[in-house]
Length: 99
Image (cartoon, rainbow, N blue to C red; front, top):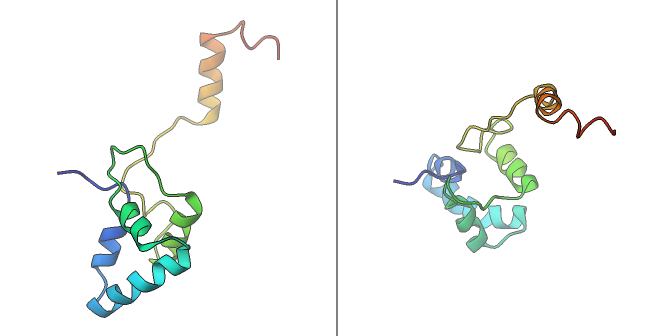
C-alpha cells in the first residue's frame, strides 16, 4: 500500500458529508486550481517526485487549521548549515581556499 505525500485526503475525510461536498466546490476556487488538479494533489505518493507548490501547501494548512509542515506526510531531515560547512571544509579544503 502506497502512502500519500500529503494528508489532504485525511483532512477531507474528517469533515462531515456536507462540509466535504462544499469543500470540493470551494477549494479549487480558493487555490485557483481545477478539481482535477486538486485530485492529483491528494493522490501524490511519497515516492513520487511531484510536489504541490509551497504557497498552495501553506493555504491548505491554514484552511485545515494545521501547523506549518503538518500537511506533509513524510519526515524531512537535513543537517544544520554549520555542520555542512564544516564537513565541506574537511572533505575539500583546497576548493574553498579561493573564496
